[in-house]
Image (cartoon, rainbow, N blue to C red; front, side, top):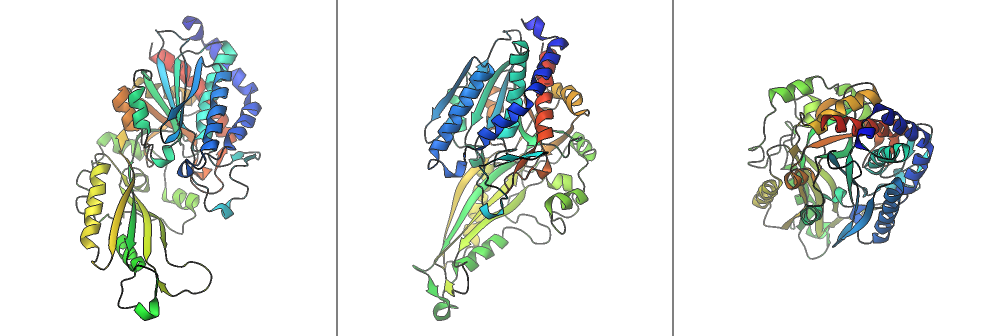
Length: 471
């Protein structure tokens, strides 16, 4: 069976099956996008997660996977696991990772349609999770189905792990990986949760930034106070919070001011600088896709490096006082902010959280009470570009997209990447089929139908190419 599969005539049959099923695959993706699997709202929306899990298990079984189940995880959404081992012991085994949870939909009023009532136009599929990550991992799974239904087999063995907490920095996945380590043994790992610059510039990521997410609470008086009666005598927690946030970053250089923050930042190698040189990311494109009047960030560093190879500080939300119509002149009793730091090799998120907490405590005035909570930590990680699991993608991209991919560091975070590398001791392919206009994490998220189709075709080629390079 393995020798039959490793034949280009079988590859053609799989591609023909994929093409015939395109319209049906889109309809099924619409079904999947209707599940409101917002990770930040679990367990209140546990029924949505269970419904989505059941749908995925049924779909994987229907695709031809030999085994599929939803595995309960204490205090967390289930992990969907599936496997197919019909290629035999001589063929490589690929572990596919994806996540079926999604980001919150706020601000809801900016959505043109309900985020969980997805719809299609001629070019795009709209809905929360369309690009991040339901549409992307389904493209991979439809490629597997094309082999299984179109030829009766696959050129590689597959294992699938779909989790429901990635958008909350995967707090329970490490435990799952530890418990099921033996079951998850493989010869390589695929994560399709990224994107290209445009349809003719696909990307392979050779690393991701880490993340240190914190919440700052500042409290003062026992209750809201009249600002005319007490203003000037009582420190306003919201004023203090804003000053603390401003003290975290220099306004001109955009450098983080926390002592020791940059001590472990690893400089780019000559090879990395050469790879970055050919990536067509320009300031003009950055302005176009974001809609900003001008770009920000550290002066003197190219945009392509600011977006991927430098650490950052961001404020994501501030809560405090009165924000309704009209005037309410109060000194609020409480104020809070959610912040995060994107980290690069070799910064350690555990160390960064303590450095930030110590710095804030050292500059906070004695007139308020300060609490800094850790919301999530994810280490930065890199992958080996020369590994067979990565090299197999080059020809697959050429066959599907017509061009070879560029190699870049990813600016986002993938909490489980380093855990998978350490626990399973295997190389990883980081790629994906999204585009800058997909509006991931924003209102009106969408996924290009062309990218969905070409991405699935690329994966049909990839399974074949991987079987060739890992013979």
